[in-house]
Each structure stands twice: as C-alpha cells, then as structure tokens.
Length: 544
Image (cartoon, rainbow, N blue to C red; front, side, top):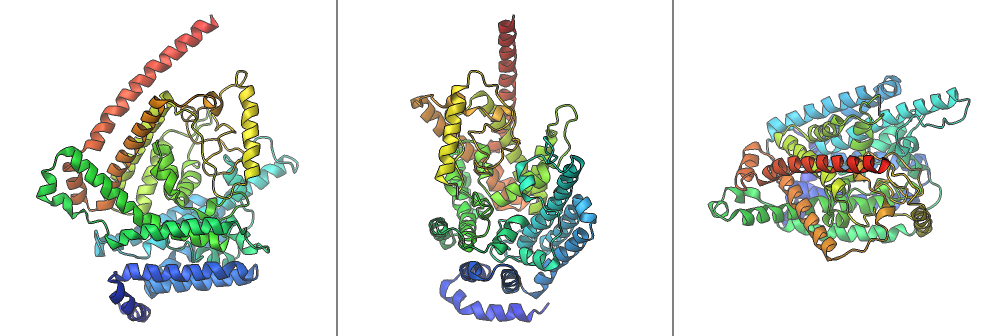
C-alpha cells in the first residue's frame, strides 16, 4: 500500500544510504538517534508541565512516522488508545489482567502479520514500539490497581499505613498511583521519543516526575552520559560486519572438532550482542542527558543494560538481571510477583518462574526459537539456584547502581559493620540482607522481599572477613566460563530464529548445552538432598 510519508523518507535518506552502504533500517536508526539526542538536550530546558508533554508527543509521533510510516503509526495507536479507554473507564484499574490480555492479543496479531509476510527476515517494524507500549499500558493498569489497594488499606487502618503493607514489594509502593492520568499526559508518556523504540519503558511516575521537575537535572549526569555515549559508539563497530550465521551449513565448519565449533558459535554470539549494546547504550545516554528515569536515588529507569557487569558475570542470575533491565523489571513486577501465592507459606508458587520465562517468549513473537531459548534460560537459572546454594561465592556483594551517593554508600557500609558484630546472634533471613541491596534499588530505599530463594541469598556477614585464595580465583574463572558458554548456547537459538536453522545450529554442536543441563541438574539435586539431610542430622544432634 502506497505511503507518501515513507516514500518521502526513503528519498531523504537515499544519499546517506549511498554514502554509508547501510540498509534503510540501519540508516533510519542512525538518523533517529541523532534526532533523539537533539530532543534529549532541549527537553530539560523546556518549561515544566505542558511544554514537555507536548514536545514529547510531537517528537514521538515524528519518530514513528519517520521510522515506520503512516500505517504502522496508526497500528500503534490501535493498541494504545483502546488500552487507555479500558483503563480510564475504571475497568482496567480493577482488572489489570484484562489490559494485559488485550495488549498481548493485539501484539501477537501484529506479530502474526509479520510472521506471514516477512518470515525469518530481520527488519525494523512497528512490533518494537508495540512491545514497549505493552509494558507501559500494563504497568499503568497495575500501578492504579496498587494505588487503590494501598489507599483502601490506609482508610481501613484509620488513616495510618498498616504495619504489614498490602503491596508485596517496595517498587510497587513507590510507583503506585491513585488517579488515572489525563489522555494528554498518557499519550505523551507513551510517545516519549527516547524510549519509544528500544526502551527502557520507564514507569509513569518516573516520567511524570521528570516532566514536572522545575530544577535542572543533576550536573553529575554528564559523566554518566558520556560513558554511555562512548560505549554506544564503540559497540556500533558491529554494523561494519554484522553476524552471518550461514556458516552453520558450511561443510568446512561442520567437519571441525566439537570444541572449535562451540567456541566459534560462542564468539559469534558475543559479537552479536554488540548491536544490542549499541542501541541500548545510546538510548541510556539520551535518557540520562534528558534527565529522565532518575527516581531520586538512582538512574534505574534510564539504564537498560549494564555491559561490564554482564560480561564479567560469574553466575546466571547476575547475567539475566543486567540484560534488558527495563523488560526484566516489567517481567518481575508485573508478571512474576502477580502470581498466586502458597496459602501456608505466603511464597509465590514455584511454577511462576517458568511462567514468567514463557510470557517473555510469547512477548517476543511467534517463533518457536523464542520458546526454546527462554526454556533453556529457565533451566540455567535452576542450575544457578542449586549450584550457588551449595557453593556460595565468597565476599559476594551487589554493586551500587548509577546515581547512588557516596554518603549513602558509607552509611550502608557502617550498617554492615554493625551487623557483622552481631552476626553470632543474628538469624539468617529469607530476605535479601540489608547490607546487600537489590540490583534494582539504591540502599536508601525501603528493603523489599527478595524474589530469590533463601538458598540464593547468603548473608554478607558470613563472608566479610574471608580471604580470597587462588582456588577462589580459579573457581571464579570457571563460573564465568560456564555461565557465558551456556548463555551463548541459549542465545544461538534466538539469533538464528528460523526453526530449521535452530535445529542445524544445535545438530552441529551435538546439542551439547541441553545434554550438559540434563546431566548437571539431576546431579545437583541429589547433592543438595544429601547435603540437606546431613545438615538436618547435625542440627538434631546439636539439639540433643
């Protein structure tokens, strides 16, 4: 179907394409990022309130029209406008799952169209912005639901917050809202141009605080801005030579020894990650420059990937948490913690973890490769839980996020030292230790129940004074290697996407990753059972 706007854009970028040799999609992305940085520089200097809302809306509409065309932009509106109507009429606020269900059906229908018309073809299409919009619309419905629950609990308690909060996590309490935003505010948030295509999908409360801020954003953000900008520019080297996975059918590659084939695919996946790092780092930089995503404590809402922490991760849990952080937060707070709980223990049912991985697979699209990829990630996460519960890392501590003040860090260290003195009298808690903040929060925030199992959260006091020897260093290298190898094995199914290619890339390496997982999980389960019995026996003998 003829689209005059797309035709005009193609003519406009033709000289750039001819000069660089890049495809239309890549050229549009570079032009869009240039516009994004101009917007990010100007936006904080606009008058708080309506001016920022209006500029966000106009710029976002321009970005969509430029990148995707008229009909795709209309398709985008076909999701967000009905979602707002469902929320604004009150039904979506009482039943947020209905908003989520509508969004997912709409998204999957759009995926189905591209699955049929562009099977296995990588292209920039409207499904990217729609995926972000699903997160935003769903989170807004849940935020209003939580806000009403919180208000009702305070009213029932005589106007005083109850001792036991009705909301499970501090994140829910921080982002809960009581009043549905006007359509103008809602649509300007949805169209916020910096995150409309690649995320992160900052919470509505974070966006509105940036819009209404009358003071200039922190000047210290410029250091973080340049760090992310330089990272993004460096990672753009990927586009000089994009990954070509057709080598998996090359007879020369197939005849290579198994170890060599595993390492070649491993390196190929490391290289492939650069395109995500490039897009996310540049988006991070623009978010920080605009002063958006800062919640008063950290740049949580502005950061979508912690590259160094991810690439040096020695356990899968850290790897997962530092990749696509915006989506991780969405899955954690709007899928995982919303699941049913055990009436006796109050804990979430174990099946919610796998359910969350499957929701992530469906959110990505119709390809079976996504289901296999996220199923493998779930199994790797099981290995993490079993392995590190029996062999905890010495002196493991979570790094502070961007934006944490040194004074807050010092206070936390003093608190940790105080707890260390009382370690003998302390009882291990199933929650995250206060000296070890959650990866999503600054230390100054209220502690939230950990979604990890007690086995995953060893107390920091036990390992504070332990010396790290050669064995610990070698074990750290071993953990880093198996974490990276298994994740890149899972990533290979995501990268090739088409099912025949998925089968081929696994056949050439003899399905090594799944075979290792199939052996390691039962062995670790037996070891944990034996260790548990031994610990209970020792405990009983001490009590006698």
